[in-house]
Length: 344
Ligand SMILES: Nc1ncnc2c1ncn2[C@@H]1O[C@H](COP(=O)(O)OP(=O)(O)OP(=O)(O)O)[C@@H](O)[C@H]1O
Ligand SMILES: [Mg+2]
Image 1 (cartoon, protein in one colour):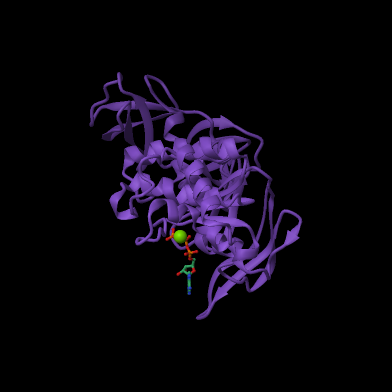
Image 2 (image 1 turned 45 degrees about the vertical axis):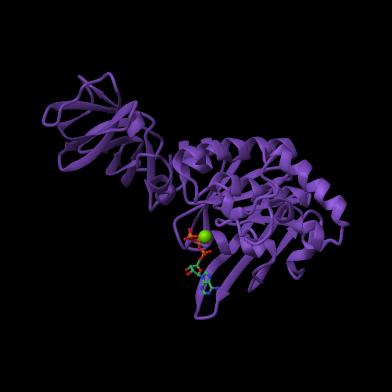
């Protein structure tokens, strides 16, 4: 097992696409690490560079105590699981799982026994003689995982491995994956563009934008104190309110109303507050008319017009709020951004 160290990594594709732009990243041994970011930000490129499927333009990759930057994929001892699982369609499940061991020239009997052991751990008994097309999406995913587990890698690299599954299977698979990773204790890098998945699974998350890392932290840190307005807008199932504001003598004002007092220099700012932390009340510093109410299941997202600003608030399901009514808003846990960066 091994940690992963990435230093000053850049990758420029022909045609001048700068997919990775000087990345530094240190992933601990046994850590479950998520790479999160919008489409095209470089997640897959970073994963493929760790796996050795791409050669970096500059910078280095270390796995454990080895510099693997110039080593071919086969010499890195990492297992990559792709979005489409990349199973061999003409092979049985047992042969798919045993394939990496075949590459390592293990005897057929040894590798099939090992494949059956691992398959059994992943609930694949009874499916071992089928072919991939005869399995459900969730079962195929388990086969891809089993194949990855079978080679005892020092790291797992997952590129959106759950994205082909429907919502219910996806939740199941994610719990399963988390448990498996805990059991095996293998360093795992998990790519997703689904922030809820990253928050649920990861020990730490790196949020990427355009080939750069914008924040690294635990799910709690990244959710609770996004370091910049990009991360603030990206993380959270309902988007954070990012409101134009001003600080005067330490008082943080939005729509000319004081929300809190913080130790921040005076001037123009962006005030961030999660809809979950905006209470709809009788009395509050902000007031306005309810524009829309969206049902979120166990709660509703209420959008309120306050002096031309649109402010979201999450209210519990037992609270009836009608469009058109006037309400007051009381925001708590106020964050202040200046020039896009968190200042308080
Ligand atoms: N082989 C390639 N040749 C040229 N450009 C590439 C190549 N592979 C990726 N790119 C570009 O590099 C950038 C990063 O791509 P990458 O696939 O790493 O993004 P991603 O974060 O995985 O996105 P998604 O969430 O859509 O999978 C994109 O602008 C992409 O078009
Ligand atoms: Mg990708």
